[in-house]
Image 1 (cartoon, rainbow, N blue to C red):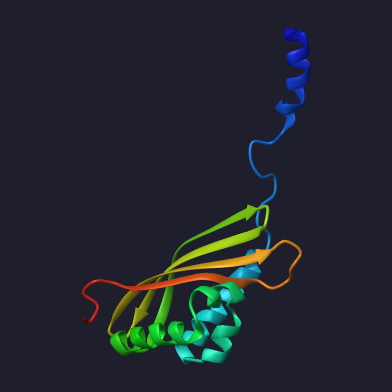
Image 2 (cartoon, rainbow, N blue to C red):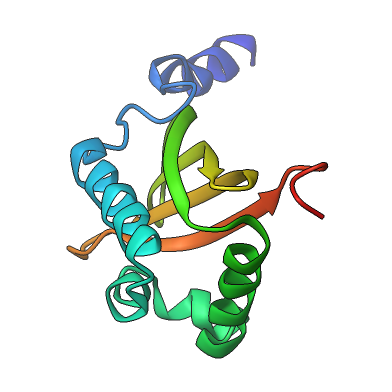
Length: 141
């Protein structure tokens, strides 16, 4: 019985502990982030919104997201620069995720930004699936 159990368990020793592949389009994801920041600087809403997935706007309608962004600009002034704090990549069965953390510097303060870029398996476009911008406390209240 022990021999049978050992024989049946042997193939499990050769299975990888985690994913054996990693998200492979970091350059493409970086371009989406760069285009996003340029569109934010220019307040080019059409270009900006073209970078987002449909599912993002199912959760946050375009008009509401534009209002949120406009409120940030009204409070903090024009976007001056974006400083990368961290980036991570993760492959999952449904696709590749690229997560970025930035400190955004505005004319009158700073904000922390987290952006998630997603590429579904079998699809070409890398799109923004999640985006949070939080003004820092003490930033021109």
